[in-house]
Length: 562
Image (cartoon, rainbow, N blue to C red):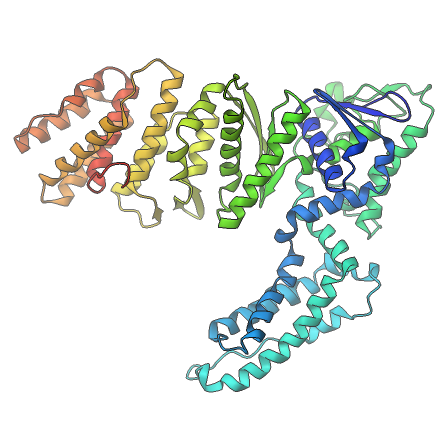
């Protein structure tokens, strides 16, 4: 931050974290329709301090608008649609399953959240005469049907009870739909589910805070110090802000509030040089860092930010495109991997936009498992992603269960490509699971074949090699399927598959060829000509080998429309 005059504050682009804060700051102002008070240039923004008036409201309003449907408040109030539906049709479609859903809503949503501590702390802040806690206690579930009872036999009695419960639930929903109630409850919701991913332990997220109103707490901790700083005489300040180099009074404002990047300077002073912390912030930079969660885009526990720092405009444009893609994906329910799907679609869109210009390397910052992961996507990886778009899309809803962990093929393939890893180890695992008939598999051999083709594109960008065409790979897979038909004993085929996979795993080309020669000799057939190429290099060997094994394990090859 550089204060040119009292009227304008300058914030230049810097590292990924301050850049995400700048983008978040602009998103918040855009939502509040205050961008007309911001001046843009390629590498910086300048804004009028008047923007800070009411910024605490702008801050939470942005998160509430963007993440409203992920909040517990929405879980409570969205039940209104079901009530209206059943009442409109005079409960004709209300059945035993609907009764179970109603009881689950009462216990796991309505009663649970009404008595939650974060909700109870809000009730005194709202000028609403409804005694919501008493209503929550009085709301009871409807007794379950006994063993020999049917819903239809007791339909009249049960529907009467349902109508009574609906009246109570309507009162609960009406309370939470009150503007002031929504304002405070939703602010609490996004604070704990989204904002906490970026900063924690201070202001409204300080467990010891005495201020129950998160808006006032945010203002007191982040906004008020900025106003005081701008009005202060800084001539005698002896220290400098680590981010913008502006003078600061003391070293009290540290980076400790930032999740996964800051540290407690009092408890962990060994993190600093010579055990003395020399990193501190001015209040303006601290406010910008508080906007980091608005620069990232979060889905459940995953977040993403594309640090395309060529300009402020490009940072904003990619973030806006990510948000558009994310909303579209949420509409069709691809929640498990929508962070990655949205990223790839956005990068492809950016590549198409720059069709007549060279696309620069892009840094992607991912937030997963409460830590940041950094990937610099070089141009060759971006090219692989663009060429392999259709193959990647086919993997979106595929995966398998490994212990208690759900593994998604799309996400795993992208993570490996982001890290510039080839996919042979993953391909081996997928084929081995198929060969051993693991039950919790939600993919087909055709999906493994697509991963092999993606891997070919990746390898072609890493080292000079002659790629096998999709038609050639298809014929190799078809040869595997015809190879299997010569054996009536499936166990014998399984044994051959294990031997071939072991040879591929240890890169034993001679052993792989010996198995083929023995098998084709037994069948009285000639070894297909493609296998001569396995001696060219390791990558060609494994590409041909895994395609052949995929043909043995899978169904008959029918081309790209399979």
